[in-house]
Image (cartoon, rainbow, N blue to C red; front, side, top):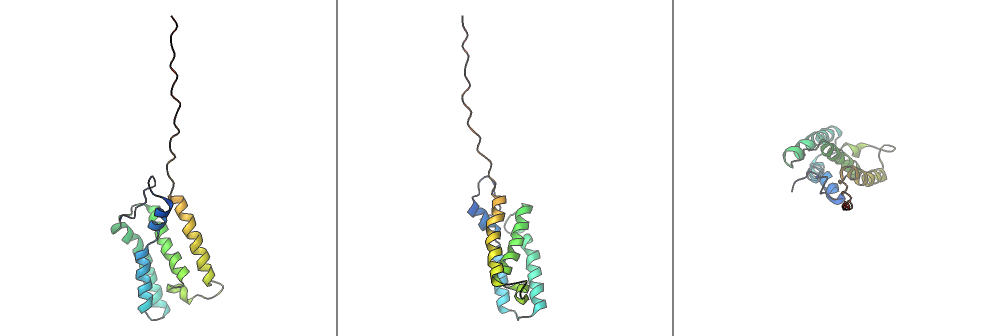
Length: 136
């Protein structure tokens, strides 16, 4: 399945699912599960995955749209923040609270797909042209 968003045929749900880099999120969660809880290695892995995400989407998944690559990469950051993983696990209040991630994820899930789901408006049917009859 291609991850490219086709604006003339993609529904909101399809766009939403294509904007979540689920494979990269899964890799991040796995790595965090086996890594020691140390800030610098965690930060390095996080930055590597953020840098790899657009490359992965471009080369492996066929995404060519720059806005989609940017939004998908930012989606990775939002998901990791919402999960309280990566370098965000070392943040404390007021910079990170569990509900911050929940609210951010909810808003992020709602807003960007609206801008990438623009469908072309269907043309309005025109009334048939009246034919003129000549008087003789």
